[in-house]
Amino acid sequence: MAAFTLRPLSLAIAISTLTVATAGHAAFKMGDTDVGFTGYLKLDAMVTTTSDGQIATGIGRDFYVPSLTPVGGGNESPVFDMHARQSRFALTTDTPLDNGQKVSGRFEFDLMSTTLGDQRITNGYAPEIRHAFITYGNWTMGQTWSTFMDTNALPDSLDFIGGTDGAVFVRQGLVRYTSGSWQFAVENPETTVTQVVGGVAGRVVTDDNGVPDLVARYNHKAGWGAMSVAVLLRELSMESAGVNDQTLGYGVSVSGKANVTPGDELRFTVNVGSGLGRYMSLNTANDAAVSSKGELEAIDSQGLMLAWKHTWSPQWRSSLILAQQNIDNPVAWTGKLQTSATHSVTANLIKQLANKLSVGVEVRHAVRDLESGAQGEMLRVQSSVKYDF
Image (cartoon, rainbow, N blue to C red; front, side, top):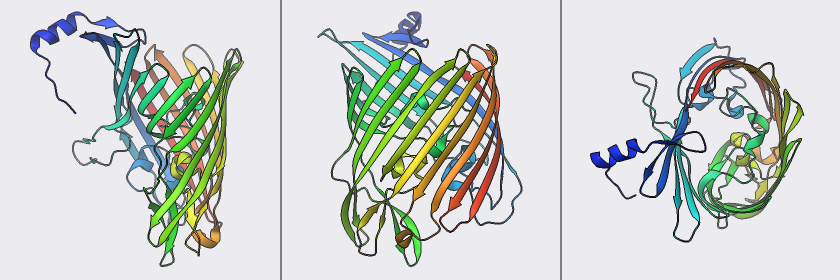
């Protein structure tokens, strides 16, 4: 990536031309380009208690990851965590071109799931890329939300995602074409596989795909709200560990939000498919399993999320979130220690102290089931302070 320097005179000129962009974030000019800076600062504090062992230090302690709810361990005392890792910042650009069109870009970072850094002294976690894409005409090119994901259906939650169990949540490289209500995309492929070696089932991330994932989406907006239908078609591939096979994966997602009353809103998503794997619930289920013949068998899964948001007053609002997933593991090839289902119930109360400053508290109860019938539970109370800029 080419480096550049901004001379003091240029910096003074940039600061003197500071404006307010239409999106509401500060912007300045660099040549013909409008440059904006936006994001938020957020502090999260949470107490987590689990029925069957402690969640290991890492992302499962920073936000809800369904596959990390412990099952089969011993009793543990509650744990307290506090962090600002969900904070994020983004640079945005808009540049008019000599052909009369415009090219825009977004470069966004957070610190949420990076593994660089610890809690011993400075909590110096490294930023990681969330989005890095350009838009030109009807085209979007770069890394951003998968076209199979509907961000409008995500609930109003203090947690990083909210209704994680049933939600599609993926960012990746893609090329997307938008025409009216239709979107078509080719996206970066990846395959995660359950393989039993020495009697122990493990996850293999293959990186053996020869064709991109294909997505088509239709978005409908009306006075009552919005709804989207998306279809995913993908190759599942593995060429390692004695396996050389490919099979087909697919998924269908129906999602949206409905304005029920002036103070009530329903958000929902329903996801079904075979080989959905990494697209749903933070890859709780793998895409496929290796059979006794060394062949890939796509794993079926279903997900559901419902979120009811109620506005009590201009300052106070709440959401009740129900989320669930079911996974049909081929137990003959995966064993009985794989996750068969997870579900969670979440309720929160958020106060908008001012236009860009809010505080809130959220309670979540989550359950994880294994194919063996064993079960583990998690209870988390989370409080947050958030400043948008």
